[in-house]
Image 1 (cartoon, one colour):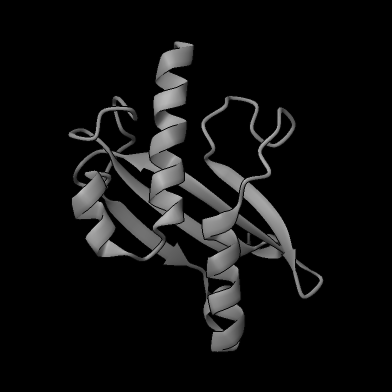
Image 2 (image 1 turned 180 degrees about the vertical axis):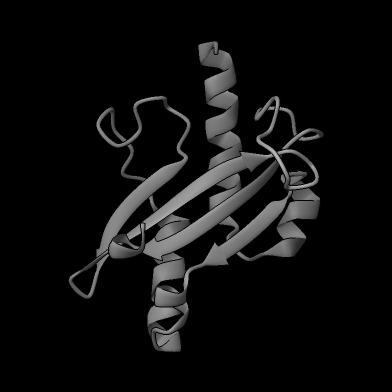
Length: 120
């Protein structure tokens, strides 16, 4: 995969993540997908869920250790002493198989999942 393609994917992932749960943004950006939270996240108080969503949207602590491929497709942070993970996976347009070309918005649907670290 070329550096140019990696940069394209990283930009798409950033936009998708920064617009977490904003379906209108999918229309504007053309980056389609779904947002999921695990049971552990959904069972937290709503206030904590909102803070976690905000932290996912604002995450920008990418470095070679946590982003070795430069795609901005995974991150982690602390919330109330609990480690939270988020990750983006690439699927075909039917959400059945992996995307054949993650940088191509016509062939790719993203799924952003937010979870507590112990759920991974």
